[in-house]
Length: 465
Image (cartoon, rainbow, N blue to C red; front, side, top):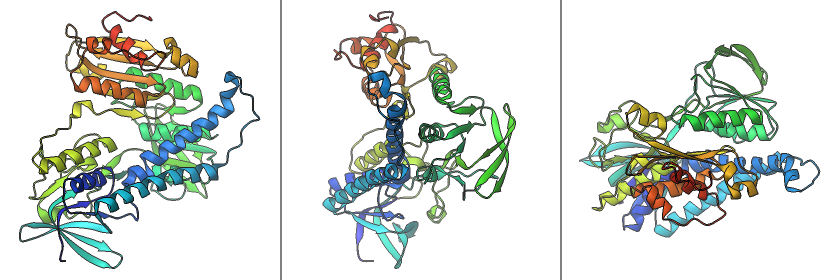
């Protein structure tokens, strides 16, 4: 061990690789420890990116099968080439991982492939890396933990064979006859949508009475109805109490609101994720978890000098964009900057059809806190652009403070919601109001006009309602 790095990062996912790149841009000597052979972490390799690739491919397939005729396009029933769809998904991932590797090379960032754990020598944080060639010791003035999270297994449903997590559902070699999704969060609904469109029978089993409890409930209820209309069976208030595997089939016993016996050939367990803290050596350097997360201060410093943490390891939603923003803030604070992540304004997106997206507070949260508000809604059915697209399902809802008109929350269910939410986040980041939105000319016809109309609707000024 002859090199001393300014920064050693454990984890090459969104938080880790973004931190490394920003640190290198600021002149730091950086090393990244990553257990995979490629960079990008769960998000790029087995989460965000491959799931969106399959969501888009499956949506095109469903559109060709069910929707082209409405546009006057008559074709023979399309045939599914699942192997090609998977190859395309893999190519998207490979191109992006190579892009990160190229950026690392450009900035002189060293990558060490292996599993890292914290240690300390004479006050300097160090990382012991178990590599294929043996153990390597890295010394860093600063060490950043960014190891992300992993899927949680459920008692009685161990991963293996027909029972798997999201990574498995992204790589099925054939369309399941019957896919049971255990967990009605965004991961389960998204991947359930993929296989539903491709021809599988899909049943979602959710223990809670309400799906998506942290989502505005008007949006959540409308989305659930839409997915049921598409053919997805959703069983809220129901839990799996037993599973019996026989060959490639599994028989499930369900109890609760919808007690029954289900037989399926695939089970996707999407019941949550937990931080990847095991094996990091936290106890060696005096770091104690709080509710499973690593506590940090405003600079993302842990209780151990020189050790920092971001992303899924610390409090807050487990989202790639949150980890990225925290990574930049952490590194820039090391250089004397004072950037802050506004945790009130982290957008959330569900990439179903229709898409759901939100930023800020929901009606339920405002009511719970006794905050007065006005609500404006605009349906996509009244949008010229949505009608032209033949995607009129859903609405935009804008919640504002009476009097000032300041926007408190925006909730979108409909076409391109994942893109539309960015305008709402930008307006809210600058404490914008209805008047600010009204002053912004929106191109016509666009989906974004729906946001303006909903904002004006909160003051009774919507023109097209």
